[in-house]
Length: 250
Image (tube, rainbow, N blue to C red; front, side, top):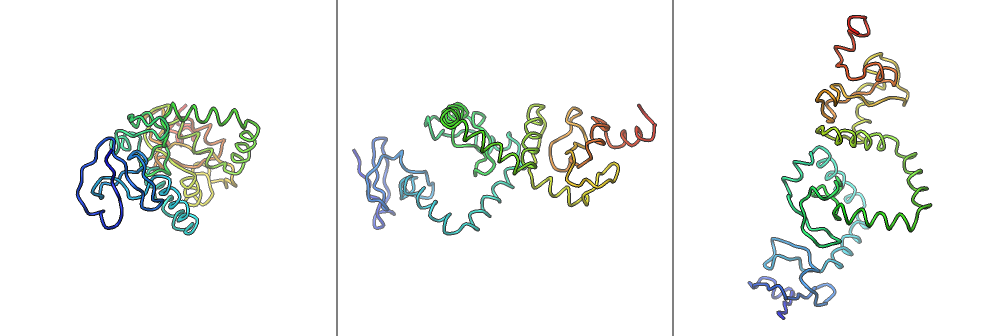
């Protein structure tokens, strides 16, 4: 078995790895298998100098020490990924190794997670389902209580999640978030686009061009209406709806 000492004085040496090689983590000073190291294309051996456990611990300590920087970075990643379609993310990274079953699979077999750098969860769909199911069965009451409180605390996020799911089912492009709804509310000065009444926090998120008529789920195709106006508008375009209100069409 080839032993690779990854210390400062030997990092610049050129060497070739074998499948049965091990490597010494310079932080915990422990010899571990190459599978216990994250990849790093800028290193001679293509792997990071510290093992996965030490890497996670280092990141965890950094996040605690610099919460504002960590939050800003995560927000940048989220804002970038929220505007990308599933196809765009898959083109950027066609395959990914599941953190649980260690199997390389197409990214189509991973759920989306916009807070991740690549836009996908770490577990594949099968492993994620099994993990969530086992976790749920162990803590049913705690889970129900948490979900109920979270939904009540984040009504705009729940709306966005439901709308995004509906758009995926209808194979429409685009996604939006809680921030999108807040920006629309400010842009419309808290008033309905159709009737001009104050929304006062009670509104529906309407697609200007309905999804059933080929409209997208991007923020540019969204507006806030009163529930009455939204039901009356239905799948009509804005011009059709205005004609309908004046009695021009049925």
